[in-house]
Image 1 (cartoon, rainbow, N blue to C red):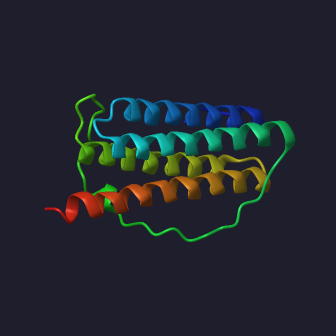
Image 2: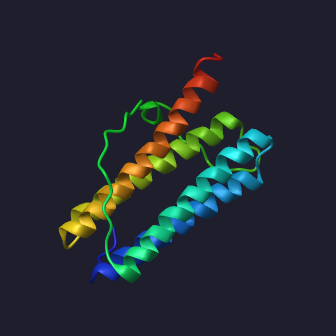
Length: 151
């Protein structure tokens, strides 16, 4: 991971990562073959936009607090093979890709929390990690209901 000189460097990095996530989900939505898939990925792009806006607000105004909650982990993403993005992905492949992406985002924010220069910023990143964990759980539940139960 990159070395950061100050809090703004950390926030700029996280803001950029959120924009990459917005682009990722927007592209998946644009290439979706069904309206259901398009809706799911559009909703996730919108959530990532909210994360980016939250980080921008923190950068401009200061910090916020987020209630901690325990998020279940079905660990489905630990047992599925990696998938490369393509315009011809099946719904199953898109869900796998999304699960893996959310897991990576969780790990990123956890690592940024470990490197945060103060408790307030650490809590911001832990809150964002918690949000990514929720996203992964939503994809795991969808995968469980759509793929595992149909096989």
